Length: 227
Image (cartoon, rainbow, N blue to C red; front, side, top):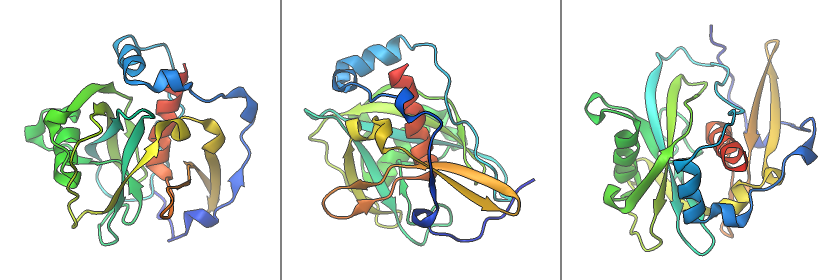
């Protein structure tokens, strides 16, 4: 059974304190370098994702989806993110990872993530070194999302699709993999409480408000890399 949420500004939803914020430490910078990321995905540790399913708030039928987590191999690695345009039917205006529905002809999440990244931001799939996948994340809008992690050369040329993407930007991976920047929120509505994380980042142009499913999948990446 789904609960239809009213429109709200996530920036105005209160931040709550985690049970023990000192229990988590940042992922070390050496662990974020390409060679270390390759080793981690080649020999995954035992770990448990913190977030697997959001409280459902739509009557839409479930759909398989995939997103790409494109790590740019700069001296300080970064992650490519997008700002979705305001007119899209789902998650409009939000910060997102490039991705979308898995089409039958894709044959799986990896091909879907690469295809969607190519369509959304012009990232040629031949320039992506796929490292692996994270566990499925089910959004409140009934998308069953598989995150695909890949490495991208720093000189790659991106061409955003203006229909879907208002902006493309990069965030230092060290910022995203530092739990000190992960803020936990709680929203009460009709006797139920919905929780999510946010990771606001000021890129010098504006505050990029990373929250919801995107922040949840990044939180799981944090646990994977810190395990």
